[in-house]
Structures are given as structure tokens and as C-alpha cells.
Length: 255
Image (cartoon, rainbow, N blue to C red; front, side):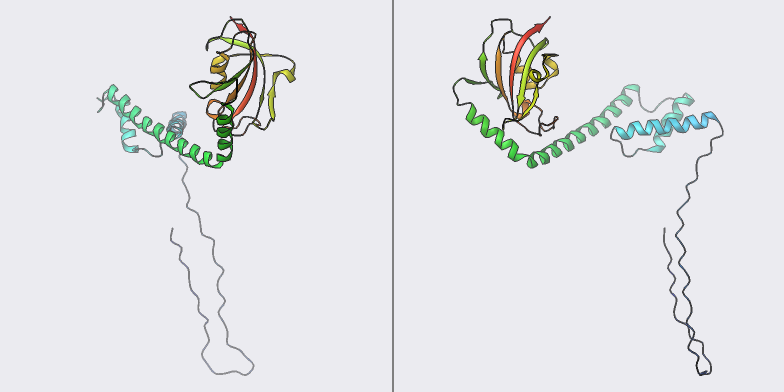
């Protein structure tokens, strides 16, 4: 909206000079507040009117949350009218499905690219933590008794059991404690006074892989790179991109 600003000039009254009187200056009028445009609310004459508007809100909200920022309203309305009028649609059902999938697949790829870019930016902030973990693992793997898997997981056998080995689909009962590289303990079932039972498919990748190496009755120490732990996410008192150390005692494989 264009705002018109009026300029006032000092106006002097012409005439004879009168002793003791000064020229009269015009007073500038107070500025009027700029009126906001009035948006006319839709008129609902029936419940159908209200429901129709509500359906539009719901559908648009769903589209927007899916990544859609605009739409061809004319063609959207035409599609709706064609269905209610029983007219032959311009696109087949298969073509409709393909068009929708293609549109939202594109949004999905855009979101993935943005997420990856944001993760890379976050990694730059935590490079000291990442470098510390990499240096630790590089030195740790040279120590006697340390084994390294193809994924980069490192482990040390503290006690070797003689029982069965679990599969990734099993539930297991374990005791454990977890620490950061500086020795800070962030979790311990020993401190809670009872072991924990969980599915091996429900934990971080380093645990899923590592516990499958164990036999019942074993106690291992795992050195887990950040990408096999919580990655770029913080988890409680665990900072993002942290390399973690766990001592795990496999008590029982649940059938």
C-alpha cells in the first residue's frame, strides 16, 4: 500500500507590519495512523460451508507439511469439480499417482540434501570431538588384545563365556556401563542395581554388532566410533559425534 505524505510549509500572512506582533506559523496536522487492509472473513451459511472450508485447511496443512509451498489452485479445483460432476478425468488413476509420487519424492530429496548440509555444518562445530575420537581409536587399535571389525568397531575380551551367541533378532539381558573418552560415566546398570533387557535391533549399531560377537557369560569392552553410536545427535549427557566406551556383560539370551 502506498503511503501519501503531505508536506506543510510555513505560511506568513501578508499585510501591514503591526508592532509587537510576530508572523503566524501554520500548525502541522498530526499524522493519521495507516489503516491495515481488512480481510473479509468467509461467510458460512451452513455446516457444509464450514466443513468445506475445514477440509481445505486440513488438506493444505497436510500438503504444506509434506514440503509443498504453493499449488495450482485452478487445476486443484478442476480436479475436485470433475470428481463430483462425474466427468472423465484428464489423467488416469495411475498417472495421478505417479504425478503425486514424483512431486513428493522431489521434496524428500530436497529435505535429505538440506539435512545432510546441516549435518556437515554441525560436524565443523564438533571437529575437535571428532578428531579426538579418531586419534584415540588409531592409537587404541595398536594395543595388545584390541580387535577391530570391518565397520571400525573395536573390542577387548575381559571375560570369555562359553554360552550361545545371540542373533540381531534376539532379546538379551546385560549389565553394562558407558563412559566418554575422558572417563566420564554417563550410564550404568550396575549403579541402578539391576540388568536391562532389550532387543538387539533396538540399540545403536555398535551394540547390535558387538553383542553378537559375545557368548553368554562373556564380558567385553567396546570402543565405538561416533558413526556406530549416536552420530551427530546428542543423547542425554553424551555430546554429538562422541566416541564411546562400553563394558558389557552378556547375562542371558532371551528366547
